[in-house]
Length: 300
Image (cartoon, rainbow, N blue to C red; front, side, top):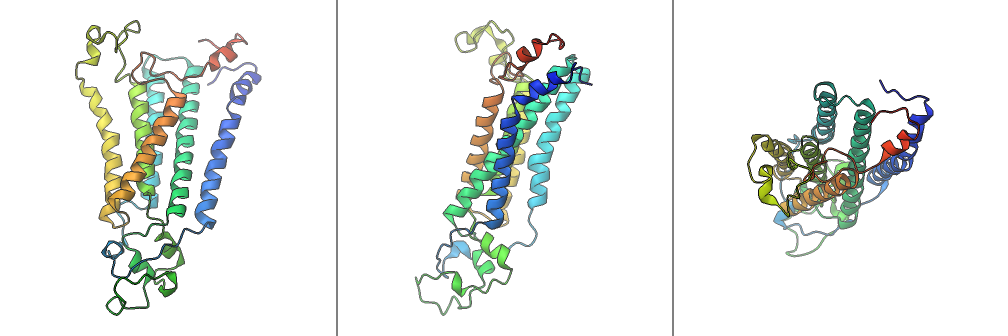
């Protein structure tokens, strides 16, 4: 239980983060509104184009629900679980510091998810690339064998047999949203684990691993624990590649989505936490405890 006394001390700490939480919520709201209300660019197409002639998969390997459970809930629960285990059994008994790590982890993780979602949805709407299964979503009223070779058509020839929602979604192939969220969630988890478990940190804080690499064996000796980094990467790859197997995206869509998720999560992590290659890799970049120390009631 937090030992803030008086309660205003906790409010003083949280006050500095209110703007960031508001921005995070606003980004999620804008992204959600964009997805529900904005029309994607309706790109013209050729009926004989083989790249949009793949079958529609009714049973996805990772549907939207599985994506949120795998790429959002699982990484978050793992981070909270590791933090709690470190606090209970790892010798880190500083409760305010534990609460601070939980708070910053939550804020940074969901800010990354929000920005990733906004960027991905914005690009989907503006690019308007056709999905590999677009023609089945379209249900053209003109037989492809009777269509003029090379003639370009628009949405007016579509009967939309799968419904309006899936038809509009057929114009939102690039970038892959599943790939961007998978890499955003699991790459953030990967960086967080590396920092909190000191997987790549020097043994001695006085040694510069770049200037004096030979003085720190941890930088040139393999440790089995570092294999943990492969698990989130493998999970992200599995989700990303499944989008090609379900004919929802091609590899350009998947590559761009993966890059967006990787870049956003890396950037946001670096704004909140110290370098995973530094001695203090498990620390945040903020000096919040200096504010709390002014009340002389929170041990550091």
